[in-house]
Length: 158
Ligand SMILES: [Zn+2]
Image (cartoon, rainbow, N blue to C red; front, side, top):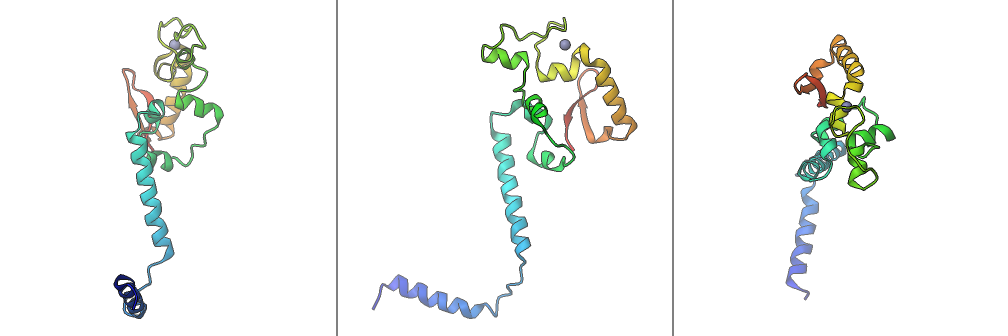
């Protein structure tokens, strides 16, 4: 005579093998994979959104879902540095004492960070206008979120 719990488990397992014919086992493996993938992405999104890190990146991609939908967006080294705010910008360099100032040399008196370069730096006004008008002309404007005093492009929420 063995341990009661083990005998009970063996008895239930043996009985379960007979239930396979009664319980439909026709759920596809792809279904389980999609459920698992959905769960992992949901957890990833929760970690991302609840994290105190990636402040600059979150301004461009507020959620993991939005980033995953932006399949046309293929980052490279420079774009990644820019979107993360970890590039060769004075705001970032000053944090690590690699620059004496965080001010940009555009004479605006503003800090050289991603927001300034995208939203308001006069050095990039022609490029900004060209890009924005190109988006509007090609009907992409409705797929982007705009804000700011001049309705500048800021947040990609595809
Ligand atoms: Zn500027």
